[in-house]
Length: 317
Image 1 (tube, rainbow, N blue to C red):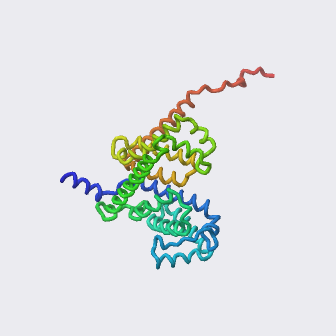
Image 2 (image 1 turned 45 degrees about the horizontal axis):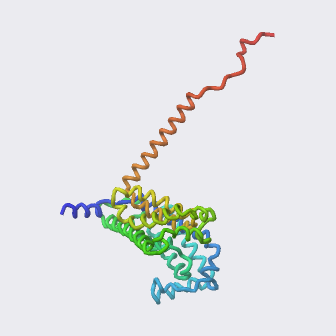
Image 3 (image 1 turned 120 degrees about the vertical axis):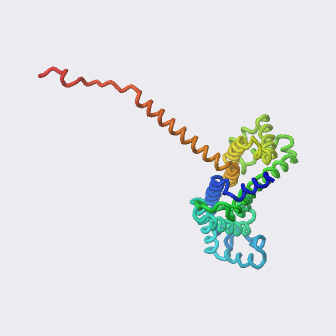
């Protein structure tokens, strides 16, 4: 009974993971801005009335609403307007301005673009779409809700939903890899590294080493399969650090920048607000110590000798 009461108090008393949630909003804003600046110049070619896209929003909104929304892409001006709205939503998330409205606008425009051209999105867009649904219930940035209010309860439920979604994502990816022959035999990273679209030339040479290929292949499967268990155990912090490094490697060597940005932010959601405060205090202390050390070194450093003699020592003419 006491355990149930404590769980209820955790949900209802005060909002949790606010620092991690803010990082997630910033990361999704950056990811969407990256897409706007890289894909926006080709909006008419990708989603326009004579572009590659020929899909319909009916998949997400149903027949009646979907057909009405499809009219937006009937002109190039409407197509560009959708991309502009996506950029505005991204800026709102990045700057913390009207984050609920920005989240809803980002979700709407992403669904419209994905429905129009379903071959373009990657795994980062898929998880972003799911997470944006939960983010609609997060407390807006810089707001101070009353303790025990409905908004606090909804915020914490959304945080749990995001965390569970990430755990499901990792576990499904890990078990899917575990049943694949290349991952099972420890050769998957070699084949991935040799695909020109998903690797840098330097990566191809590195993964020609059997040891590096085997270790990286099995380590990837192990990390993903054990993620749901590790994040609720004492291994949570090192697992998050490994995950950040793992996705940084994916961004650098495979070029999946948008996917990596979102996944790093989702990993950081598992760090509590108290831990973020402690890390901030630690960084501040380290910076203070470094500045003090530099000041002491500058005070005790030897002064350059003067080569000019005092005026009184010079003989008078």
